[in-house]
Each structure stands twice: as structure tokens, then as C-alpha cells.
Length: 171
Image (cartoon, rainbow, N blue to C red; front, side, top):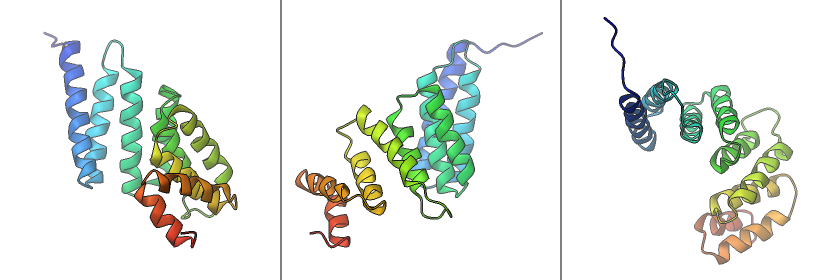
């Protein structure tokens, strides 16, 4: 006798694991978040027609959890996988921009980071966090337009921009 799970149960379980993974991630529990998000991915792939946008978001968040756990290569793999499933995922683009600009690597790739940020800004021009990340990487790459970007964000009362301008001596 075979026991088959209905698609509705599988879908519900992938959503449940996703919520549990998000909660763990938001509480800084990377290990539990990775486990729950991995289970959400597995459950969603059991669907007759997996939701690619949902999978993209799960991979993206799991990539963030891997970053939190300092599993750098796995985080990059998940961000790229997220983008492969949904090329217009501005969160994955932003995270890849951040990943390529991390200064804990021997060779920071500001050019590649800025390409990802530019794509993310094109998709979500109102996202202050993405604009801020791009501004900081521009400054680190020697492009002074980053200061102009920060000043615009400061006018919009984006607190991190005010702090960054102060730290860079441009207040």
C-alpha cells in the first residue's frame, strides 16, 4: 500500500517550513533557519508545479542565513540559484551586490557588485536599502557619485545615509 501526500499538504508544509525558517533567521539562528529553509525547498520541489518565485525567495533567504553562518560559498550559490529561478528578484540582486563587495575576500569585485546593484535599482528604484548599498560600494570604488547618492538618501531621512556621511566626513 502506497501513501501519497496531496499537493495541498506539500504546499502547506513548504510554506510552514518557510515561515519557521524566516522566524529562526530573524532571531539570528542561522543553523535552524538553514535547516527549515532547506526543508521548505525540498517540499516545494515535490509540488507538481513548484512556484519558482517562492523558491527564488527561499533560496535568497537561505543564502542570507548561510552568510550569517559564514558559509560564504553556499550563500553565493543560493543567491545565484535564486536569480536563476526569478531573474527579476531585486533581493537576490542586492545580496549578490553585497556578496561581491564584501571586504573579507582577497579580491573585492566592486565592478560586479555595482552591476548587480544597478540591476536591482532598475527593478526597485524606491528601495533605499539598495540605493544605500550601491552608494557605499561606489564610494569604496572611488566613484564620488556615491556621496551624492547618500546626500539624496539623507534628504529622504534614511538614517544609515546620515551615519555614513558622518563617517566619511561629508556631513
